[in-house]
Image: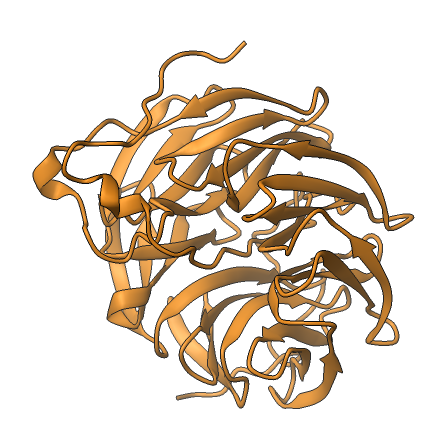
Length: 365
C-alpha cells in the first residue's frame, strides 16, 4: 500500500514550472555494492552537455585532474570492467566514444542506431547498455570487442539506462512511454517491465545486505521527489516529496517538467540524495527507513554522484558551469570546481582493485 505522505507539486501560480520540454538524465556508479571502496582508484566523470570537453575529478583531493577533448554534446559515461576505457555517449555524432584511460585519447567511435542519451556498464556481464532516445531500443556493447552485439526492443525511446549494483540487470527508463524495462544482463532478454503514470527520469537503487537489488528510487515527470518501486513485487509502494518550500523560494526557469532530476544512493547504503531544480537544492533521506535528513542549497543542480567513502556528493551545476562538492555530514558545499559548458550528468568511475595512479591518466590543468 502507498503511504499517503506525499503531495503533487502543483501550486497555484507556479504550475507552469513543470509543463515545459523534457530534460536529460543522470548516470551513477555501479557494480560496487557491499564492497570496501576506500582504497580504490576513482575518478568522478563530469560531462558537459554544451561543450566537447569531459572533466575528470579526483574525489580524494576535490581537484580537476584531467580533461577529455573532442566529444561534442557528451551525455552519459561509464567505465570498462578492467579500467581500460571510459565510454561516453556522443549525441552530436550518434556514437559511443571509447577513451583510453591512460592517454585520455579517443581510440574508437562506435556507431549507434539513433541519438543516444545515457549508458551504463555491467562489470559482471562485461557489457555496456546504451539508452537510444531516437529509437525504441537499448543497444548492447561487448566490452571485449567494443562492438554492438544486440538491440533490445523497448516500448519507446529510452532516456536512461542504469545497471543494478550487482551487475545482473540493466534497467531502461522512458519518458514518452512512461515505462521501466528490466533486462537480464546474462541473456539480454527482458525480465519484466512496469508502466508508470509519468515519464521516467533519473533513478537509482538500494540493495539488500547480499548486494541484490531491493528498491528503485525513480524520479517522474511533474513529481517533486521520487517514487519507491519494490524490486521483487514490481510495484510502486510509495511516493515521497521533500517538505514543501515557501512559494517565494521556487525556481521558475529550467524545470522542463522535471522538478527532480538526479539521484544517488551512497555506496555505504546509508542515504539517498536527490536534486531539485524546483528549489535549487539537494535533499537527503536515510536508508533503509527513508526518513528525511535535510537539504543543501546548490543552485540549479543536475545529476549527482558520490565519493567511494560516502562522505561527499558531487553535483553538476548546469547554470554555473561548475561541479559542486557537498559534504553530506556537514551539510554544506565545500568546493565549487569550474568545468565545461552546461555540466549535467556525472558518474563515479571506481577502477578495479589494484589499479594505481600510474594506471590511468592524471594530467595537470
